[in-house]
Image 1 (cartoon, rainbow, N blue to C red):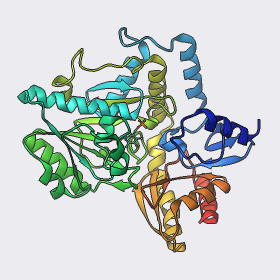
Image 2: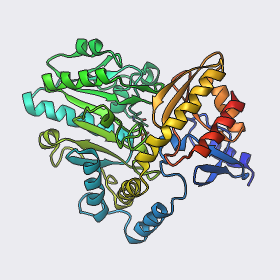
Image 3: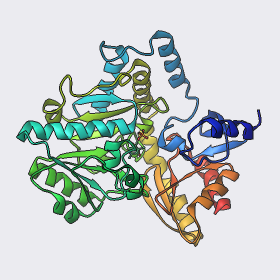
Image 4: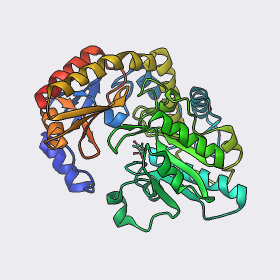
Length: 395
Ligand SMILES: *Cc1c(COP(=O)(O)O)cnc(C)c1O
C-alpha cells in the first residue's frame, strides 16, 4: 500500500491528538529505521529515548519470543518468574529496596504520588499534604501526573487537577525552600529535564534539595523516566551526583519498546507506605514486560552499554560543539551523555527537524527552541559522523 494510504487510514480512525510527521515506519535494524517506501532514517530519537539497544537486538528479540511461547500474562494474583528476576536486577542496579512495576511512565508517577501521600499520612494522619514540583517539568498526561507537570498549557483545560501541588524554579534552591511547609510530603523533579528543554540539575541544587528533604522528612522523588537507564553514562542520572532519591521512576528504555514502567523505593519508604489494598494494576509486572526488563538489564551488562555511552559521549559532545561554533542559528548545547540538546535561534526548531527528516535523520524537539538528540545507546563514532553530516545539511 502507498504510504499516504496508511496515513489516511490512521487519520480516519485514530483520534487526532498528535500532529505526526508524514512517514509510516515499518521496520528497524540497528540504528536505522525504514518507512513503507523503503527510505532509510538514521534514528537519533529512539522512539523518544526508548530503544536503547537499537532495533533487532537478537538476544532481546529471542527472549521475548521465548516468553510469548511460554506465558504472557498472569495478573498480580499469582507470582511469575520474570517479575522477581527483573525486580532483583533493578533493585541491585539502583541500590534501592523494592520495585512496583507499571505499564508506563505516567503510571509510575501516579504511584509515587500515592506513595508520598501514604508515607505522610502514616506519620501524622493528615489528608492535606503538599507536593513541590518544578516549573517546565514533564511527568505525564494523566490527572495526577499532569498536576505535577509544570506546563500551564497542558493543564488548563483539565482543571481542577489534584490539589496541594506547588511549583518551584528548577535549579533554584531558594525557590524550593520558599515552598516548603509542614504539610510538604514530597519534592519531585527530573534529574535532567527532558521535554522542558534538556536542563540538567546542577549538583549544588540536587544536593541542596536532598538536604532539605532530610531535614524535613520530605520524600525526594527523582523522575528518571527519560534520563535514566544508562543514557547519561551512568545507569541512573542521579548516580553521577552522589544524591540518592527516596523514590525513583523508570520507564522509556526500561523495556526497550515493550510498554513497562516502574517506581523504585528505598527501604525507609518501602516499609512505611503502600500495603496490600493500596495500589494495583492488572498488567503491571506481567511476565512479557518483565522478561523485557530482565533481558535489557542483562544486555546492559554484557554489552557494557553504560561504559560505551560514557566513552562515546566525549566524541558526541565534541562534534556537537563544533556545530555550535560553525552555525549562527545554533546558540549552544546542553545535556549529558546521550541526552543532548542544541539551542536553535532565528528559525523554528520544527523547521530543522523537518529538514532532518527529509535528509534521512530522525531528531525531535524539546521545549520551544531545543533540538533534542536521544539516540539508541549503541551508536558509534561512525553513526555520529553520519548524524553530523545530515544535521549540517538540515541546518
Ligand atoms: C516520557 C516521560 C514521562 C511519561 O512517560 P509515559 O511512558 O509517556 O507515560 C514522565 N516523565 C518523564 C521525565 C518523561 O520523559
